[in-house]
Length: 109
Image (cartoon, rainbow, N blue to C red; front, side):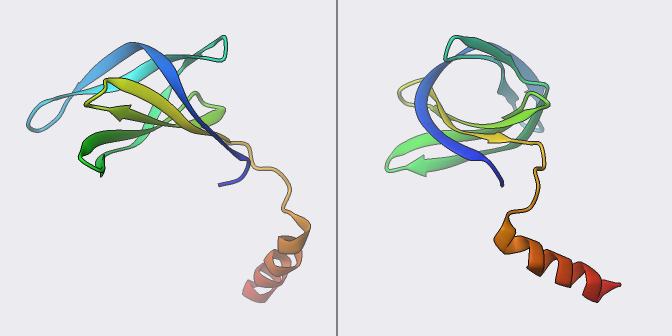
């Protein structure tokens, strides 16, 4: 992923929506307040539980259509953390990768 910025700051999730899973109702973030801005998520990506020590952490990859966000929900402390923000737009290739990319494309032709 390009243009990833680590944040690791606690944020406020101010709205949720629920989706019926096979076994139970699942909660997803819908709106977040961070750094004085309100971000409304338009799509969800990956969602998976994991553990940090003994604590259960739920990881959410979300997007607002322009930017990707990775959120973690700590099920024990009931806190949300914004782990990173990634620009979704594809920028120009970095110089060190341009030659490799061009050779791969030309070789595939």
